[in-house]
Structures are given as C-alpha cells and as structure tokens.
Amino acid sequence: MLRLKKLVKTYKTGDQALKAVDLEVPKGQVLALIGPSGAGKSTLIRCINRLVEPTSGEVWLDDIELTHLGAGALRRARRKMGMIFQEYALVERLTVMENVLSGRLGYVGFWRSLTRRFPQSDVDEAFRLLDRVGLLAMADKRADELSGGQRQRVGIARALIQNPALLLVDEPTASLDPKTSRQIMRLICELCAERGLAAIINIHDVALAQLFVQRVIGLRFGAIEFDGPPDALSPEVLTTIYGEEDWQATIKKDEDAEDDSVEEELA
Amino acid sequence: MPVREISGAKVWRRRSTGEALLRWFGWLVGVAVFLWCWQRISAATTWFFVWDAPRIAGDILDRATPPRWSYIDALWWPIWDTLNIATLGTMIALVFAVPVAFLAARNTSPSVWIIRPVALLIIVASRSINSLIWALLLIAIIGPGVFAGIIAIAIRSIGFCAKLLYEAIEEIDETQVEAISATGASRWQVMVYAIAPQIMPAFAGISVFRWDINIRESTVLGLVGAGGIGLQLSSSLNTLAWPQVSLILLVILAAVVLGEWVSAKVRGAII
Image 1 (cartoon, helix red, strand yellow):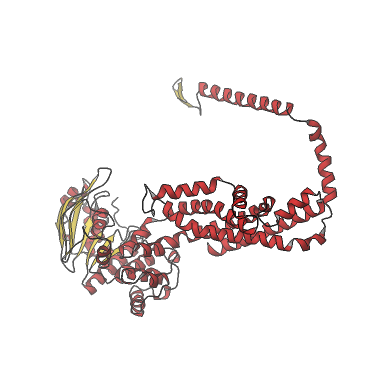
Image 2 (cartoon, rainbow over the protein chains, first blue to last red):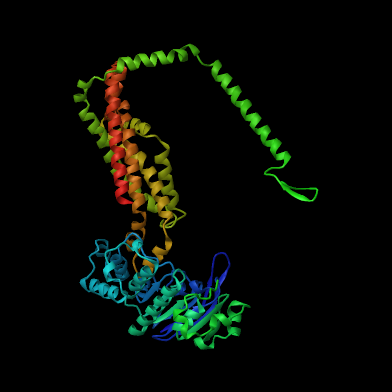
C-alpha cells in the first residue's frame, strides 16, 4: 500500500538524514520505527506526507507517486494520511470539536471552514469518534484545558476523521506517563485494526513497541538496520541500532508489564 | 584569569586586578565627562529664569484654577472628534497592517527576497515619521480637518501594528501549522485554523494598545489644524486663557483614563 523507493533526504546543512531508504508497508500493517535520536525517524514520516520535501527517491501511496505532486494533488493525497504528533499539535485556542473537525479541512471549501459550517455528516462522525476515544463530554472545552492523554486522544480523532488509509505517528507517547502511554498505544492499534489502517509509529520505547506492533524497523544514521517481528529484537540487534548498552532489562517480554509503571528510558 | 593559586589553594575573584583597574578608570572617565557637560550646560543657562520658574509655575497654576467649567460646552464636540480620529485611524491602520504583517513575517511571506523587504520598508517608512508630521503633510494635501487627522493616525499606526503583529506571527508554534497542513488543508485554511487562533491574543492586545496611544496622539493633532481638541488647546494657549487650558487638560486626562480602562477590559476579556 505504501512503498518508499530509494528515499533520500539531505538537509541544507549537508546532514544526510535518510540514505536511500526502501520500505514497503502492506495494507493494515502497524509497524514501529525505532532508532536513536537523530536517526531520521521523524524525517522519514515527514517525507511521506511532504511536510519535509525529500531530496530524491519515490513515495508510492497505492498507485500515486507523491514526491512530484503539485499543491492541489498533494492536498488530496494528504487527506489519505492521518498524522499524530508527539506534542499533540492541537490548535490550543480552538475547542476540541474544532480541532477534530479540522481533520476534514481537506474535504471542505474555504468559506465553509471559515464560518465553521461543516457538513452534518462530518459533525456526526466527529461526535462518534469523540465517543470512541472517550471524550464526548469534552467537545466544547478548549484544547488547552485538557490533560496530555486527553489531548493525544483529540489528536487521534483528528487524524481518523480524515478517513485515512495510513497513519503517520510521530512519538505518540513521548510526552505521556507510562500508563497513559500504554492506553494511547493500545487505542491507536485497536483503531488501526478496526479500520484496517496501516500505521508507521515512531517510538523510543522499545518495550512498549514490542507489546503492540506486528513489525519493527530499526533505523540508524538514516539507514534501515533491522526489519523483523518484535520477538526478533535481541540484545545484538539493539546494539546494532543504538550502540553498546545492557539491553536485557529493555526487552524483557513481561506479561506483568501492564502494572509495571516504570519503563526503561531510552534517550 | 580570575583563578590564581596562592600557596596551593585556588583563589577565585570576579575580575583580575588589571580588569578591575580598567573598570575603575572607565568609571572615572565617565564621571569626568558628566561633570564637564554639566558645567557647559550650566554656563549656557540663564539661571535667573530657572530660579524664577517655581514662582512663574505657581502663578500660572494660580491663574488656571479654578478651571472655567462653563467652557465644557464648547469641548464636547472636539473631544468626540478626537476619540473618533483615534478609533477610525486605528481601524483603518489594522485593515492595512494585517496583510503587511503576513507579508513581512518570515514564515508566512510568499517571497522572503522580494516581498518581505517591501513590507518591511512600508513598516519602517510609516514608523519613522511622527503622526504630527504626517498631519502637517496631509493638511497640505487634503486640507485641514478631521479627515486629515484620521489618515495621519492611520498611516503612523500601520507600521507599529504591522511590526508587532509580524513578530507575533514569527513566534507561533509551527507544529500546529504542520498538523493542519497534514490534514490536506489549503494555504488559506492553514491561516484561518493554525495561525489566526495563535495570534489572536496578540492582535487584540496590539489593537487596544495602539488605540490607547492614538487617543493621546490625536489630542495634539489639532495644534496643526487636523481636527480634535488640540485646536481649542492651541487657541486657549495663544490667548493665555489659563482656566480654559486647565479644563482642556482635565478633559484629555479623562479621555485617556477612559481609553486605559477600555483597553484593560478588552485585554482581560480576550487573553
């Protein structure tokens, strides 16, 4: 469904963030992208929806090549890709409802969006999604009144109301406490399963990733070092991705992890 | 280096001896220059008038009190004009300042190399000339009266508002812009959903702040014939009608206090 071919991103400073990355994500697959800070994880997902312009290579979403689209075609392609951010990236001074409905901007004309006259079907869907993420009562609150976990739920609803085929998720849990992190990851993965969405999730927390995803990609210095199931993450593999460290505690596949509120931190 | 070793112990001082001496010498030169200037000014001052000043000031205060309250009837219209000049001038300025600010802000300008410098030039040109001078120019062009005052206030305020607003635009949180762009929103939708909500408090604050300043500025525009209460002030001063001057100053004070109160209320309500 999503195919990256020889994707390269070189920043103006000369830093090569991505070195000819090839990646194929089938429909409905949730994959975690792990790797040290600066490995190019954020750049990779931003190159897919072109918040960052790739230097060369191709990005195929179904049968559309995204890197050469003009402004209008890019807008239409972006509607198919929902994005969830680390710091939630809600518009703080708008209400929860407005934030969720902003996911429909790609489908609604300028004047209708200016006057907030969204089609009733969009409003119905927004209420349904708010109910699904457990925030129905908050619809009229301003986004900056919510807690971190609640904000991320709004972020999820905003991404899903786009009716996307693919979710791009950038560090969804990095600003959240361990319990909320699990709830958010579970919610994202459940929703992907319900709707048959593919997702690429950037994540620092290896243990958390192992709990929820079907496939793990390890990125180091802009190149893919590992591609396999979560069980295959051995200390040797983590050493090739992150460098030397004692990895036993990190990849302990603990069934009691649900109650274990202290997660291993990977900086 | 402020760290020295004296018999094995590390001693730290803020400055080395040489630096400290240099600073003392700097202060010495500064005080000497100040005293020399003081002496020059003193030599050029007619001290008789200065010693006389408290008596003259007391005399004027004496003549100015009590204010001539009956004169208030002649002031209602001019003060109303003054408030209108300030309000309309600010509104017109905002209409132009918003697009100029978007063109000048580095993150929203369509062209950083061509359009941004033009927008910055507009801002500098408008800011560099005092509204009293704009009024003098405009009276020559469109004749004396309230309209010249409004335009003078507007031109002077465009730069002020646009400058503060574009700084606010440059300080917005870009991830919110990214998030809205990622939904497939158009450039204008991004402006309405991601940028406008973030700069709204700044916009409201700047507007009432400038309105507040403009009330003060428009009180003097009448001095050059651009409408408002300044005209009465100027003629009262010329005829040495001190009780009228004191009443006019009281009215201006009341208008400014009103302006302060309104802007405090608006700022409190929006932020």
